[in-house]
Image 1 (cartoon, rainbow, N blue to C red):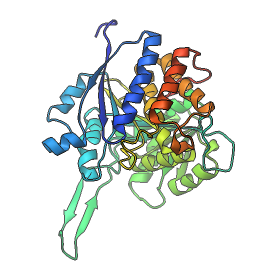
Image 2: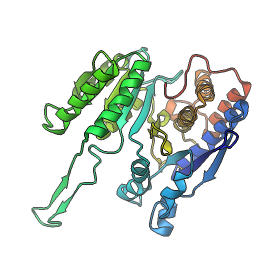
Image 3: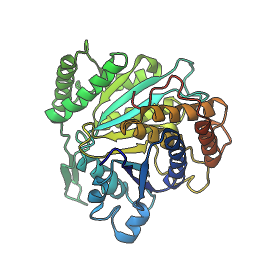
Image 4: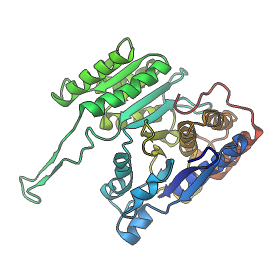
Length: 365
């Protein structure tokens, strides 16, 4: 692709509130890319639960080939009450993560201006959770035995490989070195006798080789308590697929709402496209009401810009929604009265004012 060619973005709004927060994020993207002279080209794909109801699959048979022709994938939300999660998740998101080797799931957890959290403290939270994204507890190895009989059983195998653990640990260690130099690893090696000690060994080896002074390996139950009692003591946290999923949702709740949480599914080498999605689900209980919080999708868009090499634009987009929050404009989940459209319009106005990015350095700093 030549320098003058636009960067190609596959847009999948998906289900529920994804249909509402995706246009909000695209409006903000359009505003900030226009200011910075960035060219993005969107391909809108109508994949998701409606597609499943019509075709029996979440995306077409050649869907991965279609996505591979893009520079990034921008996803809204997936899931519907009448379709099992095993169909919606394993029919779209997980195949994308694995086909494109998106082995890092990066989730910022940060206190936002004007957003009260549930903790009785004013101390700010600012951490990055690095979740292994392609193996671990989310293995497909296993099955069901003796269905419908008294001895019915289910078996699910956890798979850790040296390659899988070392590369996510290396990413986390490099991120820690770019921040405070502090890396915490989530484990459960006192109870899980084979895979978790293996995880601990490789994370420690990788951290040492990276130049970090060491890694703080913490049992996940104690780490969950630390998230609640002393979240400001954490900076970069690396965790397996399941533990990282749980801890990042807990972190989002501690900063006020899971509706504000962004994430990136990264192929750090850039061999394949990376996927960007907010942490929240499709929220069918509020879908169509125009009250969904678009911050998670807008922040995710900033992470996508950062990944595509547009660091200043990413920082400016984050700074814009932070100024809107600081002015007291927010949606109902954060205690405000703004609709999705009203909040989005306020962010777009801030972007067009062009006051710059303040002290923020982008979604993946």
